[in-house]
Image (spheres, rainbow, N blue to C red):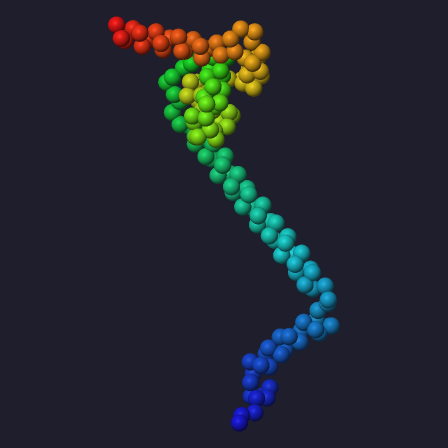
Amino acid sequence: MKNTSLEENPTFDFQQNHITFLFDEQFSTCQDTTVATIMAYDMLIVYLQQEIKKLQKNTETNKLNSMKQKPSNLFWTGSKTELIELTYALHSSGAINSGTADIKELASMFEKLFNVDLGNYYHTFIEIRARKSSKTKFLDKLTEVLIRRFKDSDE
């Protein structure tokens, strides 16, 4: 049987010395782990802030690239109120993205598509709701002209 003393097993000696410094009062304190944890969190915060900045730059770059796309050749020639009425009707129907599209996304898309600034479309929607006559004036007009077109095509 072999004797496993410290002299014969230098690895064991290293491990024992490695553990010793954790308890050596001249080498470490009881707060070392706490300080190391705080320093690690500080480093993590710096790293995460850098990653957030990278993501923000990528988002801004993507927005700029999407704005650089060729502008549409279509121009809305009706009133802004009519386009807003149409936008809200499409949003309410749930026909775009299975109803998950946000009104802001739709308005932004129509602004780009038709080269128009819809302004405060929320306020305009409130004005449309407050109409004394038909609240769907433009949609009624669309229905009428489409039915007329069907009749003209049948003749």
